[in-house]
Length: 150
Ligand SMILES: [Zn+2]
Ligand SMILES: [Zn+2]
Image 1 (cartoon, helix red, strand yellow):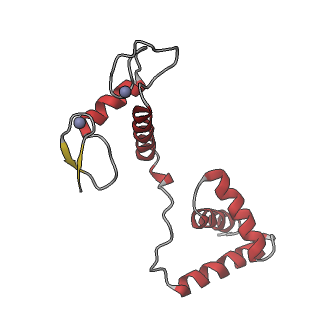
Image 2 (cartoon, rainbow, N blue to C red):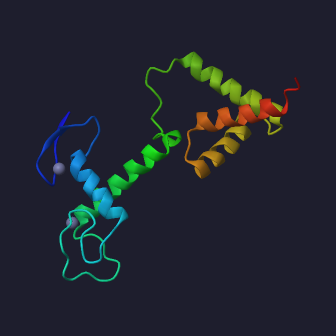
Image 3 (cartoon, rainbow, N blue to C red):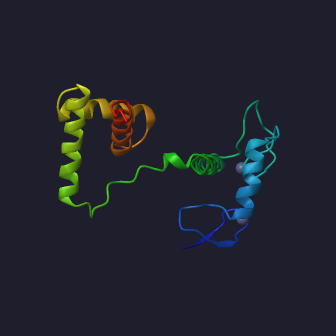
């Protein structure tokens, strides 16, 4: 999808929502991580009224910087891929087997049935920000590691 850079007006191709072309994004990133007092970290505008710690000249710049920082974080932490909504095409059988897998693991681990196991998984998700499936797989993996004697 063709987008227009909000700073330099260059057009560029991006498959996700982005405000800036690569060049501008790079320059902004540099300013964000090496800020200069009195200069907007995003657009580089000189802020004559800059109070201590003021980093952005406008709400718009603040929003842009937040997006760039988030993008950078996701690039550095690929294991925390944004949790996608479950695919619509998910087959019902697959869902059913996930439920019984959860129930099964709950019994094995001594939590009880499905409800109790899900409560444990959900609590972990809240702390980690990962998906229910990821936490389930993790718990299952740990359980199997601990109970596999070969
Ligand atoms: Zn640009
Ligand atoms: Zn600015």
